[in-house]
Length: 117
View 1 (cartoon, helix red, strand yellow):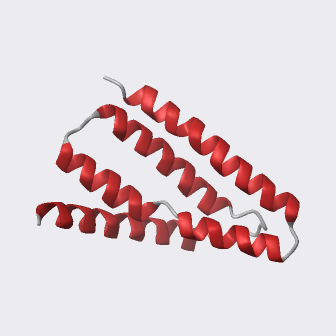
View 2 (cartoon, helix red, strand yellow; view 1 turned 45 degrees about the vertical axis):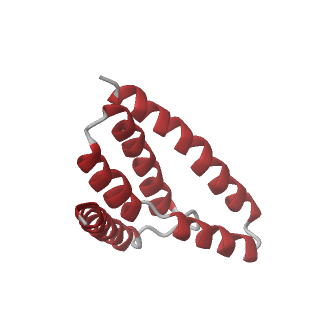
View 3 (cartoon, one colour; view 1 turned 90 degrees about the horizontal axis):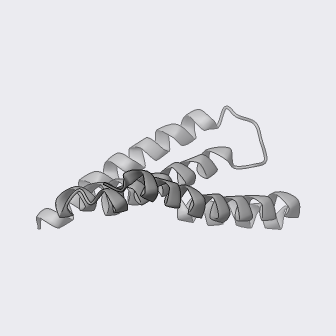
């Protein structure tokens, strides 16, 4: 039961943080979904760091599965990719796809290396 509460509370905090950042980000006029991109990169970095830091099961559950699970935006990412594809913005589509996955892996690795004891 405690695990469910840790994940749920962490996810709520992560979702609220993501919502606030997205709301502020709507003031940036761009076809490239910059806020979702930055949210996913910072989330990847934080999860890499958290994995290496080995903080213990309750903290990892709260921050990893909970907060970072609620913070990162895989469904939004895919929705934005679909919209770019259907609007025939192929150069932005492929740039967003490649940069998100490519840089996501790199920042997760950087977070892991920094988080090692």
